[in-house]
Length: 333
Image (cartoon, rainbow, N blue to C red; front, side, top):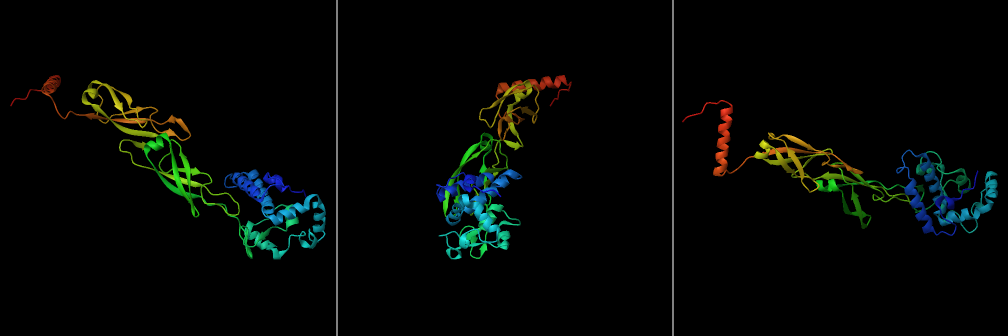
């Protein structure tokens, strides 16, 4: 059995204050928590080591007991294996006993607090009897242990415009944490879709016993757009084209979410409702804003609502020409 250097595990020194130790533990716990590293056995083992180290160093009394071991830990080990308490009288001098508010958890309470199996190393179990808890402290209530709880995740809805989803944006949110309210700036990536979830790490419910806070998840709800319709990464829009352009061909402006219209070449004899694709003018991919979908423009042929005398004459001539080409008889009244 090896001596466990709990100070080294937490990255602190013997001169570190209790506040320093608590801060170091919280930082490491967030980094190596199993929920953050699912399936990572190395992080799970590190997380257990971190918890064990903080169980000892996080309390001034057990920290002093650990410091008293020092280089004499082998002597204490032999005394414990011989059947006697590892410390003279069961407690190191000056630390008191159960009257000081400390006791050793029973095996049943250990299972209730940490689940099946001993979460602590042989070194810890030999010298600290499993786990010592203070009545009323964060790790136990009088007579019964309670497991430190990782903060729960929180989910809220956030409403965005299609322009927000296209370009990405930053939203400042007010988050209620206990009796205090805090603000957090959340970056919304370009390309998010309706119903997608944005994870904001560490902004959920606060954990207990020094464990990491949960995460905040923002569920996106996109407002209906008056001009564009979205389907996946593609956008659909209506492009107004004069009847002369539809008949003879030409160019037409197509609105885009980027703000600047795109130029569309309209071939001659384009039919009303015909659809054209403008490649790369659709929604960006999350995490790859240069990779965009397509924009589909549906042609809406604009019929004239008023004709000048000259225009009417031309339309009448066109009508006559069209009749002659179809060899239709002329109607007489």
